[in-house]
Length: 371
Ligand code: NAD
Ligand code: TYD
Image 1 (tube, rainbow, N blue to C red):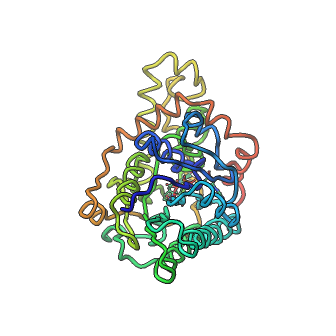
Image 2 (tube, protein in one colour):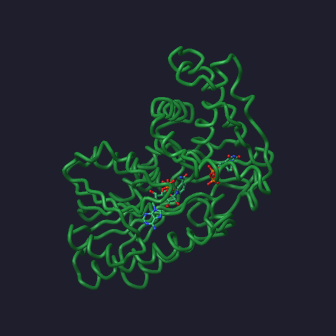
Image 3 (tube, rainbow, N blue to C red):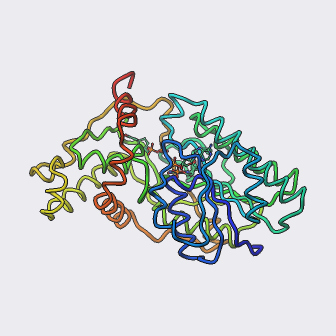
């Protein structure tokens, strides 16, 4: 890799981006990191509090569709790397309101690419630049139970507006490499979990609901399968791609952990019962958790109507990143769930603050109107 030490990291007030900048600033403290984030419902400055005192870190509130702003940041801070996490990221929201997904995920990525092309290629300010796009396995569509896991050669067959918008962005990134010589890379990862995840995604929602004694919604039969990736392992995978990955190349990053949704939720319930059941302090803090009342968290599971177009199974083949870049996930599911549960149990101020009235209304409406 060219020697890049100054980065624009977009969407880093969100889940994966905030974990990534924590990882990066700890591992490479001399690198300059400028975060650009619009602070949508999913963005949270509190996820970056620990970095505010870091002398090479700065935060800019702004939109990736604002090309002039992005160009100014690249020039003024002499940035030569972009890692694009900014996105609308929740499939359910893409079904009820796809417009924002088109705007941020497609138009926003395009504006970022244009800004990078202008400053780095046309003005020739950064010969060894890198534009890295963080994408998803959902662009590949859905697998049957006996299909081999997704490789990077799998055709793009997106099924949700979210997946289609991410697929479009990936195609634009590829086109900018081929047409304009922008130095790009793409990583397509499986379902992430860990600290700072907005409690609308399955694992974070399950934890935040069970400690409040609220229902744990399972869509359809609960037999859909996802491949779970602990967020730190994802950050290490992106690091490998940025440091050693070839430009113009795509790398899949997975956790090697396939689970049915119901199997996963049951495992999390058992873990929560054990951890809360053993701690008088946690029982006092979470009196509505079933484990505080001698009941099982699994008693909160409720089957609800299925998500439209619900992909059956995702599984990721990580042979390429393993063989070319020496990447393997390090955190198995039991350890990752334990770390995640403990983080949410000890950081209730963080998630209570994001579960405000409007968010709670939105989530509740999912299980009444038409679901
Ligand atoms: P997130 O929803 O938690 O965070 C998204 C962040 O982007 C937020 O901070 C939000 O404020 C910001 N943002 C949204 N629109 C913006 C705009 N127009 N301009 C600037 N900032 C904007 O998402 P996440 O789960 O951290 O996902 C990060 C990336 O990883 C996304 O590109 C997503 O598609 C991809 N991904 C996520 C997962 C997962 O399991 N969470 C899996 C595969 C891929
Ligand atoms: P989610 O976390 O939304 O990620 P994705 O849709 O990107 O895979 O959902 C993970 C799986 O869990 C998916 O199959 C849908 C299912 N699910 C539920 O069963 N109940 C829920 O409340 C949520 C949010 C998801």
